[in-house]
Length: 353
View 1: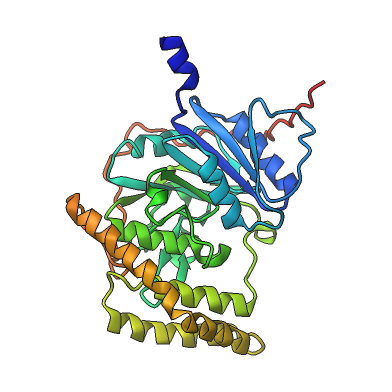
View 2: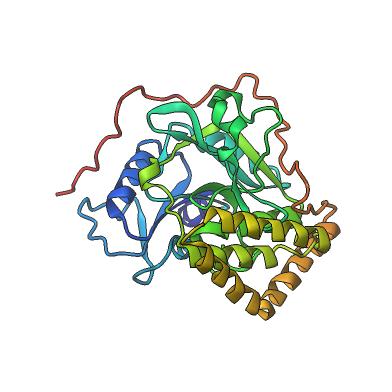
């Protein structure tokens, strides 16, 4: 009986590798994951494109097929839905795992008050240079990449989070650890209406309202892709559309009038940033989003329900005005940093006979 139970028991960790199009980047990520694979985990690759599996690795990796042309968000959601673990780790195609990168996040997520863990994304040519450290949503509805702050750019990985710097409200879409039940707080995973560019900020809002803690784990490193192969800049119309939707989807639990004032300032900032040719398309995108106001009612009710559940559980819901949504409570004394293998490259996949 016990042997049968062990055979059907779900893994504790599901590693999801969303791959909208670039199978070469997916193989690079998959090699790194297989090389450093932790115990008691499954690997799920969600594909938005065709893949012939030339290495015959379907016994070690589960492939799920998304509709052709699926976005990153669509592939993430499909992989999450197909996963069985208590903890879901999203690591997008092109990002790479390092030795021991799951150890500390899995320990953190044993605490039921922790909803997500943010690993440090470091540069491939300089493991001390932090290029990704989660995401925030500003009061005016702007998605903020935490690592873009000056203090973060100057700090080494071992010094993170730098003193006085803003901290993440959630992981970036491409790399994060999540309790699987937390991803259902906002429905079925990440929203698609905010696009790939701001879906993670939308989920960060849900985390804030839930009262669950988001923990930055400086001893968990993933290697981010180079700037040329990283997240592409959205076209102006889409950028305006998704940013405006993000704001209106964030208002539940916030002080509306201050948020509206900050939003107007954000629109001005965005217009200047997209000038000269992108300003008009961006403003048109925002106007279209405002005209869809009725669609935000369900999101408002959803967040109010999340806030109510948090209060019933004794947790304190946080608004996006709150600066400190992350705490690193445990001492890292005695915990070693991830061990890197010098300049050794990951072993290539071996093709089966």
